[in-house]
Length: 570
Image 1 (tube, rainbow, N blue to C red):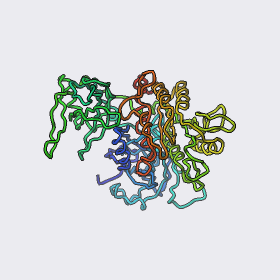
Image 2: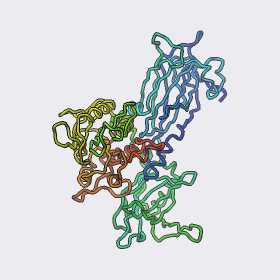
Image 3: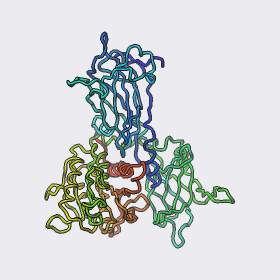
């Protein structure tokens, strides 16, 4: 288009555009891929309007244009989008929309700048405009999470003077900017499939195989990225798995190629490939309608090349249906919250807090220790999903002054109130506790998990418990029992391992590698509620602890809501 302007009422047709946010999440995507995890994401369309803008023109009203920027974790700012110019209006409604990918596990900070475009530039393409030649009408900022958690999905921001503007001793009225979000419809279309196999080949020497499926999408580079995984079925050569749900947008489209791999589960994590097929969702739908099976194949080395050996084993699609499912954002818009809780390890293995080599050392320079980093990074994301921002906070593995060792004490020192206000409140209570308790042991999780479960059982909310620890849990079976019991509750548990301990046993609590937890009575967890990450695994890379931890949380939330047929309020 040669002209970048719309009429004053904003009714003239405009070409919408999509601006991507770049590749800042590549690191977390690769990390999650290595663990067989795929986080929940949604495409969101942002629309904009303003009211009571300043009038910077002499003989007419301002001609406003909105510029959107993204502020990265390192503080750098990148422009990602410009609207059209609305002529002669102090209350513009822009037509051009901005489409952004919403990542639950990241704080996506948006910066908004409103400019008055000078008359001489009205015939210039908006992307060619030099912003330094335009007059600033004000700016505002917010996190994307702040918008999507509003019941009406709209957030109104006060426009303030740009820092580059001429300073003034008086506050000036600069109007308001309203940002409204709509989730793209394709985010809600989900394919539900029940998959089964016949005549799987033996992989175990003395028993039948323990099969599970991994479904991956193929990207242009040829790399396969896991998007879905079934449960493990013990000793079964003719397995039928629980239904799997694939978001159409998650796999690109119905005709995009998918790889379905059947593995034999091994407790050491080195699973044996039994066979695989490559089909699109459209192909799988045809298999279901035709009641046909597809032979698995196994890449086999012949000479110096691999050839696909066709197996007698077959994959069947027993059920295939498409539905419009409520998304994570639908629940947020309906008023559902994620309530944050934290439990901190005060066992003696952390070292003397007064010495610099302690994991609990409070650096006078302000540099955060691993516990502070985990609290801040996770809390920074989750605080937007909790309206009152009053967080239960506990410590465990320490001896309060003149008392026995406690495996669940209130971090703020109160005898009857475990809550603190805001992330700053957690930080203050944590620092204070270091000087009011004696580090002891052992490392027991059962008490704090049961405490969190009790709160979750008494409230109509969803809770997220963050446990930060430096060592392997001592009460492993008691912890498993508590987790299996808690799997029926609106609760997810995030565990961060800090320090140099061997956390292999901790990964048993995280069901990502196969089997669900089983209690001492033989009861199996109804769902996976634990996500574990070792701080050192991500500390040196581009991925943050919070991204690794939170990737599965929306899926755990949705699994709970859907299994109980809890629908968001309209």
